Length: 380
Image (cartoon, rainbow, N blue to C red):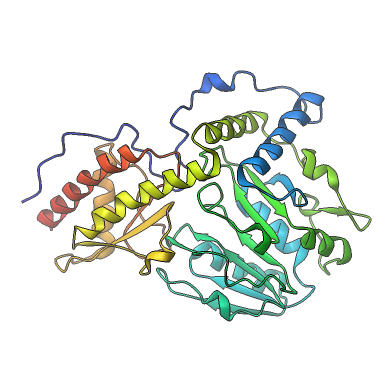
């Protein structure tokens, strides 16, 4: 028999892994001063774009000699820009333990067609980062959004590496400590941890990455939106708010709101603590229920933002259908929206736990998860 319907519902049922929940204090009226209808090249537009860059640097603790740029096409555009502009000078180590990392492998193997070695791990596991050749360029995700597996730290990356490290950090930035001295290229989007609007990506370059850009010209043609240099020199304007193409000033204002909210909860450390508390609430639930597990087998590599779960009960006859049915029940009750596993991932659930989510909502949702599980078991 299914458990009793819980009495309490989450105040905010939005647990999507992208676009993610807005900050709890979000209000569209807070964006009323956005310079809409004004050129992003006008003084007001440039000032707001530069403010977004400066606030990003301040909250994330990005070193002063690293460049930060706002680029087109979300995290995907930022990472593609980095690969197409920087790779090919030496072989590449391509690392994948989930679908987005696998996508970067495909681009290098089938589009750029450069000398490379592929390192993969199954969903729920992670590649041995210490076994890579860091004389080559290394491309990897910090947090596997579709597998719930993250880098525990950057200790495996040597300080004296000859190659560049290209890190897709889209579901890690603003929720996990990123060791900037170990990262030469870092990308993320506004739509993830801070719940900003989509379309724009962030590209952060170390001095070594800038030196590569200014000393190496890839053998393939570069589209205009990928070009970071002119006449062999970095286009510095990109990194002070002079974007390559027209940005949404409404999205910029929304991102600035999220950055202000981030400061109000304690900056980076406050955001990390909020994500940790959310993930811990789910871990505590999993530990006391024998029909569900974290997809990531090793606690140190379990994501604190994109928490992926799998059902383990022997009574389940069709894992994929069962997981979809549980997610549908939760959505129909308006207690947990968009929590189904990513289409390429093993069947299960994916619950966003980034800092914009309130721990009280996670705790209110979990009894509903138990109710939905029992209801689907009874319905089989």
